[in-house]
Length: 63
Image (tube, rainbow, N blue to C red; front, top):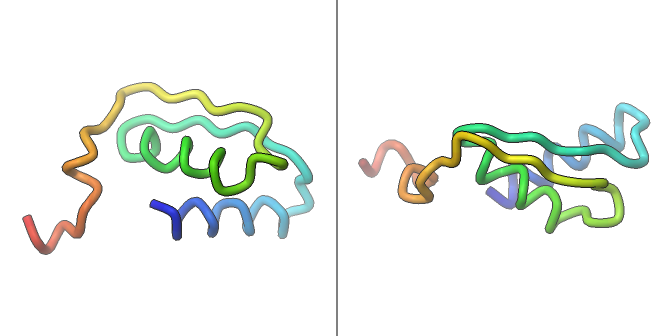
């Protein structure tokens, strides 16, 4: 999750956004809060819905 969140933070900086909000549903409900933890100075707020179980966050090949 941290790697994905760092990639999103870098993407937003690359697009010229100094600050942004994050919304995540399903798998994004795990990534969006991590984005807020990864780049708190840039994330105005986080909204999540359709919360995913963290057990689905692993490597899908191992399931």
